[in-house]
Amino acid sequence: MCPNNSETCSIRVIHRGCMDARPASESEIVFRQLMLPEHANPFGNVHGAWVFKLVDEAAGTAAMRHCRSRVVTKLVDQMTFDAPVHVGELVHVRARLSWTGRTSLEVAIAVDAEHPLTGITRRTNSAFLVFVALDNAGKPTPVPQLLLETPEDHAEWAAADARRALRMART
Image (cartoon, rainbow, N blue to C red):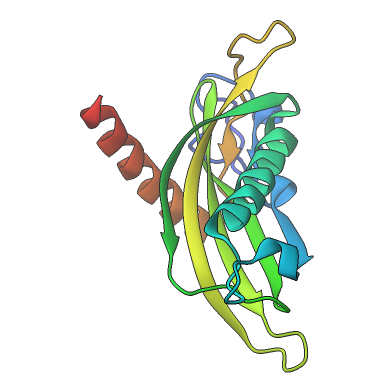
């Protein structure tokens, strides 16, 4: 039960009222872009940096939608390149919040490449990016807590919390 004694609120709403909590579903975003020759090397593979640009833009947009403030990329916890993206494929970049702290938040990313003529889709990349919310003066500012609605949200939170603990242990 949350501090406001609301049974519909997540236990993760700490030190604030339920009105400050927002579910990941409200800020989730999917960017889609057709990959063209200017995105690729001479062999038809899309540059990893181009994919990363899309990842950072999608994650940053999801983070901004959650906190309704400016955000800056603090770090990329990990990014996998599991399969190449080819010219002519439609890239889907899904960004969804997985964790919130006081002024920072983590966004989970899944990148899929779709062959638009067949509809066959495969996972090409995944990543976790951490952002810091900024106020108008460019200083870190508190973010709304993440309202966990589903068992999957709770599992994502636990995994994100474990990643955060590992990051903190490295510093």
